[in-house]
Amino acid sequence: MITIENGRVLYGENLDVINTNVLIQDQEIVEVSPNIKRGKVIDARGCIVSPSFINSHVHLGDSVAMDMADGKAIDEIVKPPFGIKHQILANTPTDLMLDSMKKSMWEMLSTGTTTFVDFREGGLEGINLLNEASKDIPIRKIVLGRHDSFLQFPINPVLEVIVDEILESCDGIALSGLGEINDNVASIIVENCKKMGKLSSIHVAEYEQVQKDSMNFTGMSEVQRALKAGFDLLVHLTAPIGNDLKLVTDNGVSVVCCPRSNGALAVGIPPIKDMFDLGMNLLLGTDNVMFNSPNLLREMEYTLKVIRGYYREYFPPKEILKMTTVNAGKALKLNIGSLEEGKLADIIIVQQISNDPILSIINRTESKNIIGLITEGELVCRN
Image 1 (cartoon, rainbow, N blue to C red):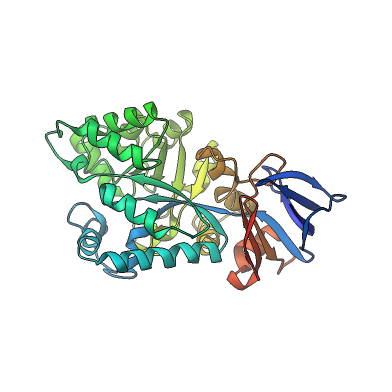
Image 2: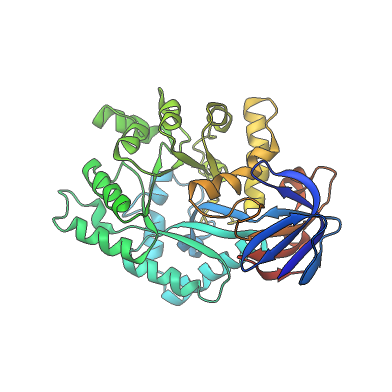
């Protein structure tokens, strides 16, 4: 049993700032009240008590290729199966892969992230590699696998068998994009994910050329095709066309935005305010460790400021923090993302540096300002 006392708690799905205590028992938040105090006590005076962060899109294996291929075209770097990153992954020794992934997971923990969603290349071997790397690291992982056979045309006759084998070993399937995947393959994958209660996700509309190619070859945008297939979670949506945004909103599909990655690859700025104004459920991911550190504090600050600069108007910082907490918990169907009774206790305790608690986290918090990190009720870090 743990009591966090005297903190400024970001309570509930609206992240309301209240001065109160939080009682944790058996992994869950059981009471939020200024009068409660039991068990081990953590004094959070002068601190903000927030939901810990959820990194909704990362390519962790690419930790071995940090800052390589800068300045190359996006398809030259990441397009499977012959992109620069795929060549690097294929030629990197296993021990180096393991070590680099471990370092990235510890970096996530040190910057307040306790859950991440990994787009896992390499089939069953890649999934097993991440499982090995994450042993004894107190971080929650959602592993979305894939297999090289998904790229084959004509369709592999044992595709469904391969899909089921992948799904038995991880939390779902994530595809590179509809520029490499046949629409029938996408539909088969999504259908099997739904049967097994697993997550399906795909990159869509990451840059203008893939949208143009999709329209030229199929008469539909990548977004239209992804929605037709029935994917649960779309990543990027940097270059929507026509009524793409309305279609996504009408279908109730969540979108993971990755602004720093889009900036690093010079493919644009995601229209986050337009998405928000339509009522879309938005998440945030740091994307490829090849381009970015897996640090959501950096991602949130960049996102807030680039939106304001792009639209030349105010955008509420609370909505950025929700992208890494409340919204992500809902989209991923996890009992985390907000601090309220009955939720799993995934909590970050950080020094309040400025007068505004939300902006204090987004604009000014660094690893050294995190005085405590709790995941599923266990204190995993305390400074």
